[in-house]
Length: 106
Image 1: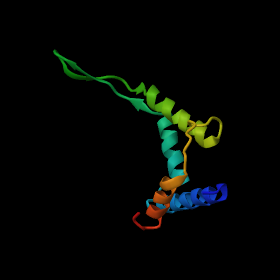
Image 2: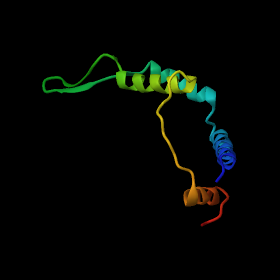
Image 3: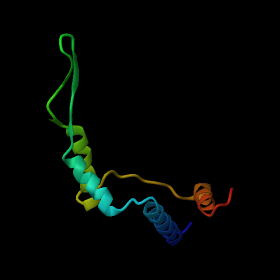
Image 4: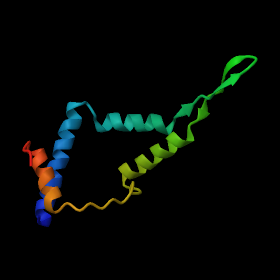
């Protein structure tokens, strides 16, 4: 497949993904609202105390959740790529994906 054909394929795939996201009410605003909530995430620890039963901690900062949210925000804002992934979209794989997207079975 030519580079132009690969670009057209990826553009079409992106358009289909955006249509599906809209259909399921996944919007940019909704994603960023959830991202903002994750950047402020807290968690509560639960301990089993033999004398008092279950004991709950004060809300603690959920560092792992916040770190993942920070990485997502950096990637969305273009500050830092999420990760580098290389794909080989040639040969029968490309044909199989194109056939799948067009509704044909290969």
